[in-house]
Image (tube, rainbow, N blue to C red):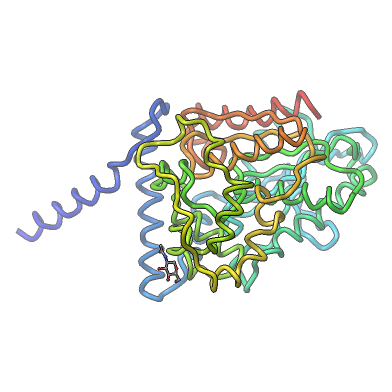
Length: 397
Ligand SMILES: *[C@@H]1O[C@H](CO)[C@@H](O)[C@H](O)[C@H]1NC(C)=O
């Protein structure tokens, strides 16, 4: 009897976790279902641990992330320190700094709070199989660790990037006129923010290119069509996006439920933002997926907004809210169709183009958020994502 009951519960649970909508046209739907079910179990366990007051959810995820990828010593990588910031350098030439190589400064993803340069060895080495470029991947401080929050991770990225741009010729034999910056997810946010900050400071030399892979570009509107359509994932859910955004913005995660209803902004801020930066009508109608309704603008939370607005409205936190996007580096922007972040990427691409910045925008119709980091598991879409980066770099750097 008991065994029968337990196994029924287990079967129901398995169905619950395995029954998930998967991007149509995806190459390995059942494998993705299984992987996504595994990720969801960890996410739900971390939520339960946090709800019970045991440990913050992002700590559980960080721990699981540590287990997911092995840290085999990688002898093609060198851990260095640039102006006090730890970085991991790849493809550093034994012959010393006497070439005119191109360079890439990379900021890894992981919601500003997870992962590390080591976890990105595989992607960096994959890129190097296709282009002879010297890569410096920045180990910025992670949000939520020892009270770290915006702008500290960004400051680390900026410090390392400025140092690299200034000294790359003597240190690595890299031509400072041929340097790209780039990142994925939260790292894409950092890359876009670094580009804006360097432009605003009239830094020279500017990076020649920016590579933005499913970047986070704002945290004021969680009701864009792509947010509604993909709120259950795969891999990145709307709930976790809001959580990571708040963790980065404030160092805590107590307002996620307000953020999910867009009730962390004031009424006047909403009207202003929708009018200027996040115009849903600029998205093609076929993105206005079924349960989508244009969000209401007639409510708000002035008290909460007054506490967080300085960060939330800063273009260095939310590049999509930058007043002016002119004079930014030529851009590669990759957005998977099945991603909560898709629409802010599309809007950023439109605004960059309107400001005169050349943009190569690729939307993958069957991929989901994070696909570049799952290349070993899902090679069809994963290779496509990585090849987009290397093709762009090969053609433009
Ligand atoms: C938004 O937040 C305010 C302040 O907490 C609250 O009074 C209001 O009912 C909320 N509105 C909605 C639509 O959730």
